[in-house]
Length: 196
Image (tube, rainbow, N blue to C red; front, side):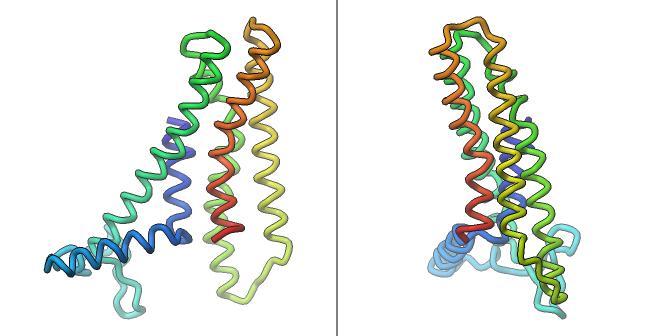
């Protein structure tokens, strides 16, 4: 739930508006639909309670938009959550403890919480910017919070791994695998706030 839900789904759901990949996928899908004369997914008759539908302010989604957004969120959840799950499994295998990857995932809670906070606050920042309020130190603040979340997750991971009776070399290798898992909680936000 933590890896695929709170981290994976939250990443996709909170960053799709900034993703150039989503735009490219939507354009490619629309071109394909038009080339094959399939027009139904391009209609904008979606009820307002499913997706935004305010034609008077030019804020309308199509069925294609909805499908692409859901696909983006699902794909992000699978990629981010899957990456973390895989490397936590590697860490647990290095420690030779069956099922320990689930316990190791608990160390990622601070990073997950800060990621959700940063994603939700992005909308507030957009609204403030539209009203003329600019926060010059915002990139530094976001980076600091993301760094705190990553360091807290790495520290907790180290503490969790230290409890396992294993040789120091195995514990260190497991912590490195855990660190690779942790990177999936940081990289999507770096893309959203600093690359895109």
